[in-house]
Every structure is written in C-alpha cells, then in structure tokens.
Image (cartoon, rainbow, N blue to C red; front, side, top):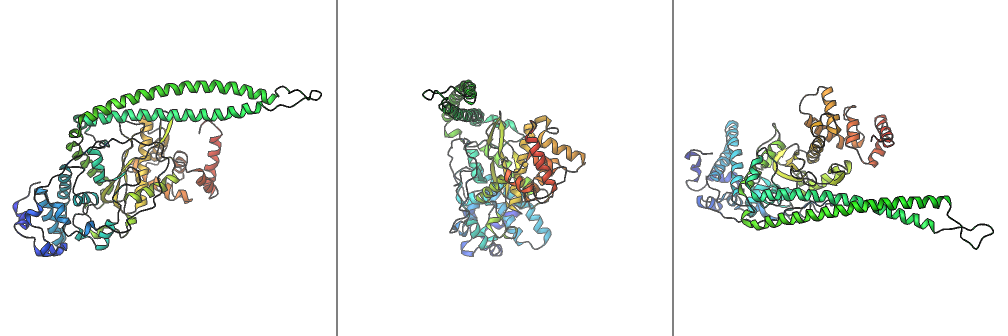
Amino acid sequence: MAESNSSDNVFSGDMDPEIADLMGIEEEDQPGFNDLFGDGESSQEGEEAEEVDLTRQAFPEITQFTLEKPQPYFQDKNYYQKVLTGEGEVAKRVHSYLASFLKAQDPQDRSLYRNKLIPAYWELLSTIISKGIPNVPEPKALALRYGVLAPHIISPEQRSMFGSVLLENNTGEPVYYVDEWLKRVGSGAANPSATDEVKQAKSNTKQKLNARLENIRGQKEAVKGQVKQRTMEMEGMEEKLTQLAESLKHHTTRPGHEDLRDFYNSGQRDALSHIMDTARNLAKIDREVEKQFDKLNELSEEENKYKDKAGDLGDTAAVDRKTIESEFNTVRQMAKLCTGRQGNHFPIVMKQYLRSSIRDMATRENVIHQMALVEKIDPDVFTRTFKQQKNRIVPYTILIPSYGDMGICWEPFERHNRASSRGRLALPLYPKDLPTSVIAALGDLRWQVAKEKAQHYWMEEGLTGKYYQWFSERRMKGDVRDAFVQDYVLWITKESEGQQKLDRDVRPVFWRFVPFPTEIKDRLKNRGFVYTELYKKDVNRSMSDGY
C-alpha cells in the first residue's frame, strides 16, 4: 500500500509535540526515526504435533482468573516504539495515520484516517509475523495478542487490567491467543485452518506429513475407542459371570438326606445356561479385541514411520512463512465474521471501546469457564460419533483481538481426520456480552457437526433437517444457520431455566436433538404443560426403538 511522501513528513525529525502530547509521550522519551525503523531479527523453532486426549471428560475448574499483581508490560514508556521498530514502510504509515487520527477534530477527517489506519495496522501485524514465529519480541507479541498498539490511548486502569491477564496456558485446554495459535501452526504443532485455497498446503512437505499423521492418529483413536467400549463390555460380563458362578456354590439338602448336597435348583440351572452364553460372547469379543490390537500395532508402526520422515526434514522445514501468513489472513477473516457487518472493525484497542472489567474480556480462563457452564446444560456439545464410538473433542478456540457480538465456528473438524481432530472456533476478545459470544460459537459448532454428519441429507435428517423443515415451512428470512445459532442461545440461556422463548414447533427439535441432562429435564417437567408433554414423549420414546 504505497502512499505519497507527504504522509511521512512526521518522520522528517522529532515527533510533533502536539501528537506526542495526545499520545501521552513525554518529549525526552520521544522515539527518533532510526529508533522506530531500524531492522529487527528473530529465529524459529519446531514443536511436536498435538495428540487429542480423548480421556478428558470435563474442563478443569478454573481457580485463578488473573494475576494477583499486574505485570508492567504496558507501563513501558518505550512500548509503542518497540512495536514499530524494524517494521519499515508500513510502520511509518501506521504511525502517521494514528497520529492524524488522534489529532483530527473534524468527523470526516477522523473517519478518513480511521479507514486508512485499519488496513495499515493489519499489514503491520502481517509484517511482524512474517519475520518470525514464535520468537516475536514481547511488545510485538502483545500487540498481536491484544491489539494494544499504544498503551497511552487506553486508561491506566485498562493498562493494569491487561497486565493482570495470565500469559501462559496452565489449563491444558486448546484455547489460544492469536500469537500462540500462529506459533503452533507455524511450528507444525497444529494444521492450518481450512480455506478455499486447498492447493496451498500441497507445497509444504511437512504439512502433508502432518496431515497424514493426523489421519493415522484419528484412526488410532477410533480403534482405541472401540477397544475401550468392548473391554468395558467384557468387564461387565466378567462381573456377571462371577456372580453367576458364585450362585452355583450354594446348595440345600433334602429331607431324609441331610448328609448330601441337593442338585441345582431351577434358578441355578438358568445360571448355568447364562454362564455358557456369556462365555461364548466373551470369547467372541476377545477375538474382536485381539484384531483391534493388531490394527493398533499396524497404525502405530505407520505413525512412527511418518514421524521419522517429519523428523528427517529438520528445523528448516518446521516453519513455512507462507503457511503462517496464510493462517494470519484466515484469522483476519475470522475477525470480520466475529465483528459482523455492522460491528466495530477498528483493530486497535482504545479506551472508549473497552469494557471496564477483565471478567468481560474473552480471556482464556473466562472462556473455559463459560464453556464449562454451557457443557453442563448441553452435555453433548463436544461429543462426536465416529464408527459408533462417542468421543469428547474440544475444538481449538482462537481468541481474536477484535470487538464483536458473536463467536463463530470456522470448521467443525479437519478434513483429513474426522475421527479425532479438533475443529476451529473463533471468539472476539472484546465481546459485547461474553456468555452470549461463547454460546453462539458452540451453537455454530453444533450446527456444523450435525450438518456434516447428515451430509447431503442435511435438509432432511437429524437436527439440521428438522430445523430446516421448520424454517422453510415458516418461510423465515435470512440464513438458517444464523437463525439456529440465535435459537441455541435462547435454548441455553432461557429455556434451560423454564422461560419459554422458542417457537412452540422448534422447541421439540431442540428437546430431542440438543437434550438437556436428566436433572434439568426433571426440573422442567414441573414448570408447565409444554415441558410436561415433552417429558412424556421422552418416556414413550425410551420405551421404543425409535429414540
């Protein structure tokens, strides 16, 4: 984005004192031209690709939401200078536009510079990440993470608020800030998010290997799930077998023959029959498990082979800058979707746009806490069925430094691994209402997983089919997916409390396909005729094969 030299006159010498005053920078602390626009360096390191732990059945309880003592990251008087240093021409334009934007009094001038500043700032971030992930200098990483370009345009309380955010991921959950996410993708620890430009991934050998590894791991997890399911069946049978065998040991005596044990009674003879049937079933399941372990061994050997190939590529192949830049462009698209057409697309944090409390921000800890609350109401929100095996798979959640109303689901799972791969959710870091933003993202996930499950029958079968038919019959306007997400928000926030906010014909669709846990259903059945009738239908279905 080239601009005329007149836009850079502010760099002909020291910073304009009036602009420095607007930004809260004292005269002796003003950065010079060379300080701002010298060259910078960074290096790269690789990481191991992640395996999804399917044994985790719930989120950890968050006991620490913030640091006890705020860190002084945004008290550094040279923070702004450090963010722009070494970023060349684009940094000059960002500095010029920001200064003009802050100085402008006329609304039209302010809007003009605002519209120039937005793409220039995104270009600045793209330039920063193109020079090296993960070792981006701290101020640049913080700007990328939070959108804090100049701490002096936010209040002291807000600077302290940002300093209170926990930087490290101590939860073990796949929730990442943008800088962390780009680091994972760039180092091969996570695959790039899906885009329409699928050919791009073919140029990177390591990404191709990672895709194959993901496919193998998905198959392994599916087989492991089948083994766990079958061995649990075996344990139940073995316990029953023990009880049946124990019942055979008890004998009575017959009158006149008290010195002799009686023969088996009718109940014990039935037990013998059950023992023989159970033994045959155990032998059958045991043979299946043996075959599944053989399959696991084959997959493990294949996995190790591809791991060795990936290792042979070394660190030089660990980071593909084009992949990182592509992923960053994807993140920018996520930001647009989170913000919405009518939202605030300004990517730089300013005090008038921020809420006053850190609990209103989509920090990692706040998001995990909100997701845990939703999962208690919708226990199957993260459940995915593959080859008749249910697994709980929490998607990657990327925290986008943007303003917005709704979180979104970018993809429900990776195309190379439907069995155990994580999908992608994106949440605005500064939402209008945090719970609503999280619930919307999970509702979008619910819709997309159900749609993928139904495939080309999505307008006829399952959750999406029933909802689409209702949507069409009512001749509703707009996008059916958006309508579902809005109704999902009502389902979680209102209907779970007995407040009847959904259309009477769509409520049964949610009751059946997005079911509340038993304790909520038991509570709701006494909250009105509508829920009583739904509960009765549940009972009738459970007594038939159609449920």
